[in-house]
Image 1 (cartoon, helix red, strand yellow):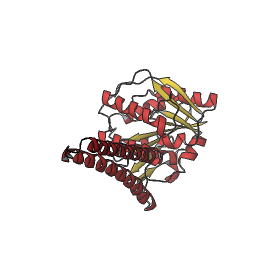
Image 2 (cartoon, helix red, strand yellow; image 1 turned 180 degrees about the horizontal axis):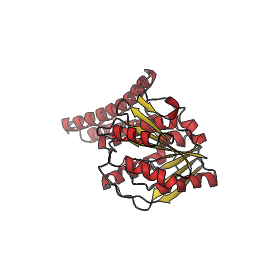
Image 3 (spheres, helix red, strand yellow; image 1 turned 135 degrees about the horizontal axis):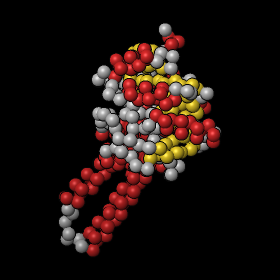
Image 4 (tube, rainbow, N blue to C red; image 1 turned 60 degrees about the vertical axis):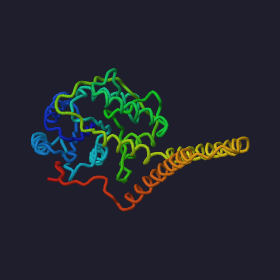
Length: 309
């Protein structure tokens, strides 16, 4: 059985070499394929990945993207070139020990799961990153109809069936977990170890987290539109109620002047709600435009694999 491991690389020059060598050392007795995807790194990751390919040409594929497209786009590139019966996705930061790859694969093989997610007793990320992960998981319970006891980890194993369904998506804004969850609920989970980052720091800035959340909110659910409709109805009802109160108050107290501050507050509230809903609609329409305009999911500058020699 061929096992593919897809690793998106972003500024991972200090860790990726040690990770790949450990994977081949620990899993060398298995039929193994490693796909490295350099996502527009600004350090020497490209050179390190090319050297690794020269060292392990038979067991490696190296994809060099033309610029930074984002983690999920890079993973999509790797999935399109992975040929294993089971595909493991893991980060380049060495926070997931290589020997735990087999834990995920064995769980999927033995229990015939389409997806096996990892979860951690303790996550050794910065507290802000952990908070963002908790928020993402909480929201995905509603937007993606995710099982509430499931943690959407980046370290996971996908069956060939799941990979084939995921790579059918050609839009410019992929979200791997959303694509996976819309095709199956045959999901397992196993607890693994989460180590401290060996070098550098996470490539997920606050702006990238916002972009990831938007991909989940807008690309894989119409719930935000329904919530905006509900919000508009609630504020309309609130406005009618306040208008009735003003009329009644004026009848019983005709000498009370109508206050300009209350009018300004009402205008600001309703204008804010309208702008919020318009912005949400604009985000949906803009993404539809970019998709119809054939915005690329990723662009490959170089491909290194045995078949292309």
